[in-house]
Image 1: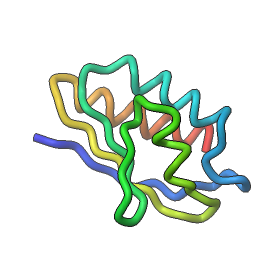
Image 2 (image 1 turned 60 degrees about the vertical axis):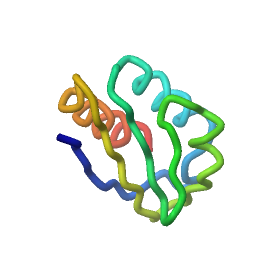
Image 3 (image 1 turned 45 degrees about the vertical axis):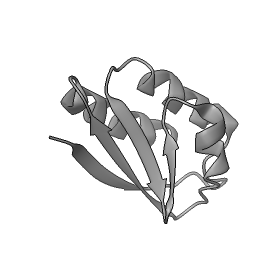
Image 4 (image 1 turned 180 degrees about the horizontal axis):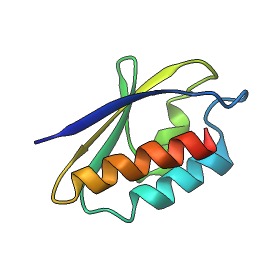
Length: 86
């Protein structure tokens, strides 16, 4: 059963290297697949270059999905790390 949530980026620069790195480090702690969507594009939350390539700007909404053995914990952790850093 996949978990999903949306988040609006509040960082004035959008998703940039430093907070993206923090998000990736958090995602890598989980076994579950974690994907980030912006419009029609998607990125693996465990890969920094993919996250950066989404080019998410301030005020834009992203959708995050987690699927796997620890998806509940992964979804909660990803939501927290986004709120704290972006």
